[in-house]
Image (cartoon, rainbow, N blue to C red; front, top):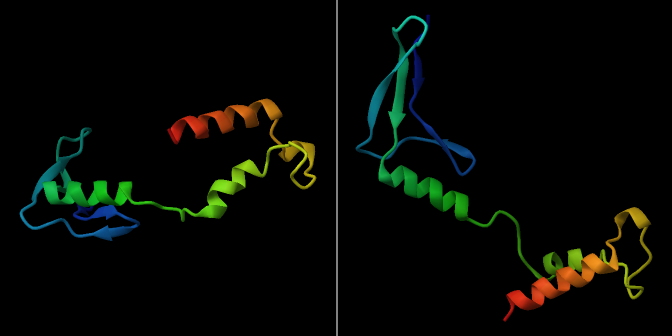
Length: 104
């Protein structure tokens, strides 16, 4: 059996080396109770990097992003859209109320 070396972390879409000061742990095969490889243990710096990457915005925010959902409302002032792509007036009113409440 080949020993596995899991010594990098997948953070922000790429494999990165652990921060200095980290340790490694042996992985044990539960069937044979023999070592099957090593595993890098993260440090607080590794955790901070992963958290920062998870909290980073992934999609651009701008005027078009906010207007895109509103254009699907079928209130007559929008261009004609197929019925399958429109949102009922009741849902549009509820969405509009939630947006207004969040701005207060």
